[in-house]
Length: 567
Image 1 (cartoon, rainbow, N blue to C red):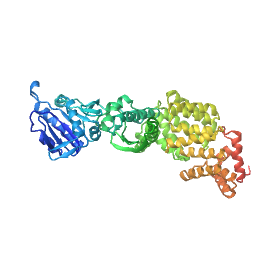
Image 2: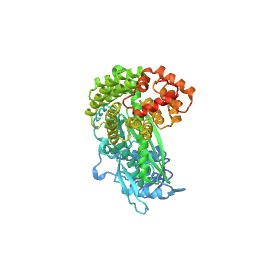
Image 3: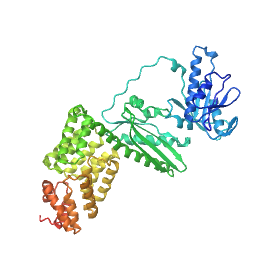
Image 4: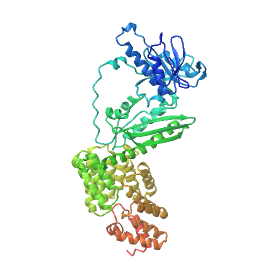
């Protein structure tokens, strides 16, 4: 039997045509083109319908053979392919037909062999399992053909169903499985590219301490199989599944990816990336970085939305932690206090979850430095204790290491702070919060150019960073210390536009305007700096914060004096 789409073919050897053949073909829109001795040729409108017809045909044959003696059973082989064909009145010709004939020849009795192109077209539309047969040299076919065998097990079909395997419990933090990317190129040589990208994404995501990532060996058991993401979620115990495809066209490659919430099959995020193939490995690295840079914030955003939907009384530690981050991101004194309550609730619910200790430490430093709600010395001591507790719980937690570095920076210990933050980045190179801490530490360590680069990396890795207001504040500081006063003013405007209640920025815009001689505007900003945040003005201008070098403090005061401050 052949099944063909304008060139997609299946063949089977059969000594007679059972009544189950023609109904299966007709039901799926096919037509028998001709008989071929003990086989026949059929044409179908799509690869999907051809696969469905072949599976139905073989299943029906198996049903009819139940009860027959083994030696008297009639078994049929099927080959299925897609390719260009020449159509005549009662026949079709071409490589598509020839390859399907060779696939039928290597199929097992009772089995179905399909080519890579057929597999790519049907895998997400028809439920079937396959085993990969690899590259096959077929008679009179110039190039090797990548072959899959559709698994048809008559014993399994008639046996007593096995009870469902119980679903694995979800980890206490967001969990994701990265499935092998489908090679849609029809070119077996591109298989290493699609596999390599998936493997690199798994490795990169594994470096995020906030994620639980399924290992490559488990994810790749789904390679070559049409899967239901709900089933993957149950079998691997994950909340999210990443799937996608790779397609090559000329010297370009296109990668599509989508992140799906397994329990609901809802799409959380989707993106398409087009790249040149000039340097395959450089392209692979670039795509991996692009995917992981987008994925981590997408998962964090999905987790935040999930936590916000739950009533406070039903929160687990992770959800309470997420709620705290949401309030912290609002950059107001009242929201900061609410965030503290959620972080403490998370610690009570799970004292072994290090993220809550790190977040509480960062809250305390912000409450002291931004709003003067806590004595700075008390905050420094408490935050360092909390950060060290987080590190003690998990020495491989990059966020905890970065938090400890930030606590040391608040003491003015820039060298030790950078050592901790650099260690965090060696563990998780794309960790946005570590880039943010590194950037600010460098800015106050007289390396503002490097600091600005690190802060920009932070914003690229996580555009929805809950500490975004503080990042923008530090960008304004960095430009000011570089003498880039216009850029500092623009950063201040961006911060004020996004966070109008944030009190800390006005002294920087006043100083920058003063340095540029824009006296009228500078005086207006100076008045806001003093009236809206008198405690901060006293702490940073009349006095000097521990992380400010004397020369940087003098630089700020100089600008404010030019803005009209009398000291």
